[in-house]
Length: 153
Ligand code: HEM
Ligand code: HEM
Image (cartoon, rainbow, N blue to C red):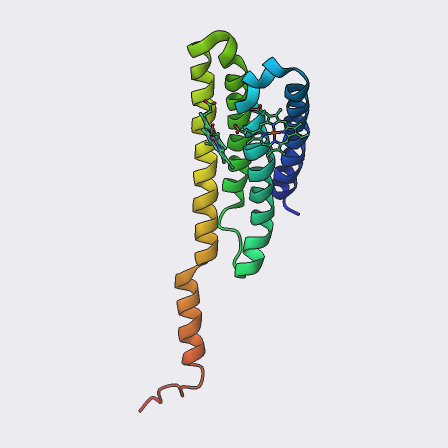
């Protein structure tokens, strides 16, 4: 398993543990419902989306038969996704207390999370397409394999 696959799955599990813990706290302390947006995104971006990122980075190259377009991009994506979600969650948790003061943190987190998602879209899109030029060249070589070489006069 590549580094970013293992760590997306571990991050997903860690966010699930944090997200459901906040959910339990919200269920027990009714006025903590002000943290609903933090709970929701810990579970939906943290658990669900990061699990999808990790599993997709593992299976899409295997399904498509093409190497992952850029393992380095996937590693940067992991950093952006986790730093971004941590800032978003921090912003959502602070918002009921400091109001618009939390918007900078929330905004930074939103931009980082979205940037990570764009990296995922680009990296997997290019993986699915594979190296088209290389495949066309291979097809030409295969097609000409039975053609006799020109004879010098
Ligand atoms: C032990 C597990 C969990 C507990 C105790 C829990 C608890 C809660 C509570 C108390 C609320 C607030 C409901 C309200 O507005 O009054 C809530 C909202 C929400 N939870 Fe959870 N939750 C859990 C797991 C999850 C998971 C795993 C997900 C997603 C994968 C999730 C997604 C959501 C969403 C989307 C909302 C917002 C719903 C809305 O705004 O209508 N929760 N949860
Ligand atoms: C870059 C990524 C994302 C950003 C910046 C973002 C931001 C937000 C913000 C600011 C809200 C309003 C919260 C509030 O004011 O209470 C919201 C609501 C919500 N988001 Fe996200 N989100 C992102 C990704 C996602 C993803 C991937 C999912 C699901 C898989 C999701 C599910 C939801 C849901 C269910 C709501 C609640 C809508 C409602 O209140 O009825 N978000 N999001």
